Image (tube, rainbow, N blue to C red; front, side):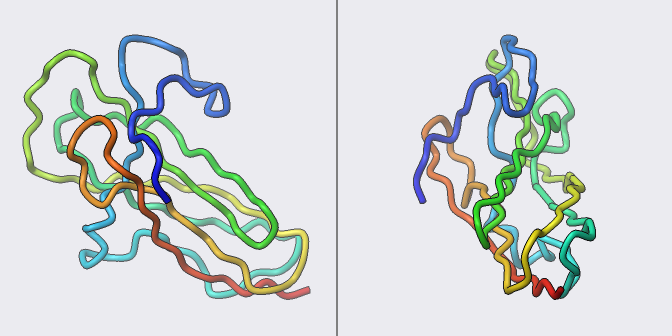
Length: 142
């Protein structure tokens, strides 16, 4: 999946528009450093399930501020995109990475094998960086 990396202000996330830019947070090349989607292997229909998403960004707060998660459930696929704010001005950001954790609550209305898909970048290289995804599966029982 390819999409522009810079996303602007998002009504879906109820983010106030300002001079900052909103970017997709997770660097998916960091997959070897731990699980990016932490969720149980199974769930029950109608019962909320907590899912923890890990995004990597700069250790400098002025370079990387969490700005919410956009969750879309379409059929058997749940698409989750973590957003961070970056300043519009030229700011030097240290290359020292830090993990940012976001928790979302999901509820499934039908049994079956569901796909949890986290959208992020393979490696941030500037405006227009293509997006990628990582996924895991959860079995929902009646």
